Image (tube, rainbow, N blue to C red):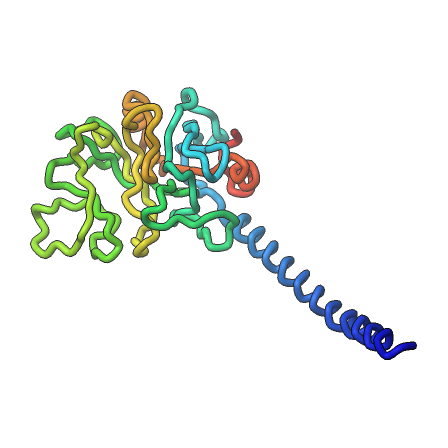
Length: 265
């Protein structure tokens, strides 16, 4: 055997001894990752006291177009559909995991950050309804908007991810905020989604269900729809039934839906 051939034989033997445990380590790491994702998915079950569910699905993570279907249930029955599907528009860059009832850190897919133009994916409670009317005959808590109420989107502010009446704040610490009274009336009616609460700076802010500008204009991260549909939803919502918003790409919904006890599409 030549010296070169001998060296090659020694290297191959060394490689077999080296790469075999390396392959075992990689296999173990991949198995651990898979078990972690599987465990995370199994632990995220929709609360049993939820009696109203707003399900928004999109064709993919990157799609800004989706549909919203309302579901309801009681102690004696499973989920059944309420009304007909509603066309909605979401973030112009699609969806990314948000901070709601789910812990997105171990789930596959993008994570939402401030300014990414993505709507939050996950399961979220609904805090309150807001609008231009001084009063509203609804069951949900209601906030009447005014020219002085703004949505704080500055991660450095202690008021980040909140609706604030700026006329009552002396030491304003934000550099950016969105007015809630706008010429296009997109906030004529809206629902405040409990995303990123308590606020984590930079994880996304002020996510609403609101009136769309038009059927072709996506949002910066909210979920928008025709006014008449939103008004019907607002009157349907009942805090005593613990309503939840579920937003997912349809492939993820079909993957996790049964594990999380979500309504069947």
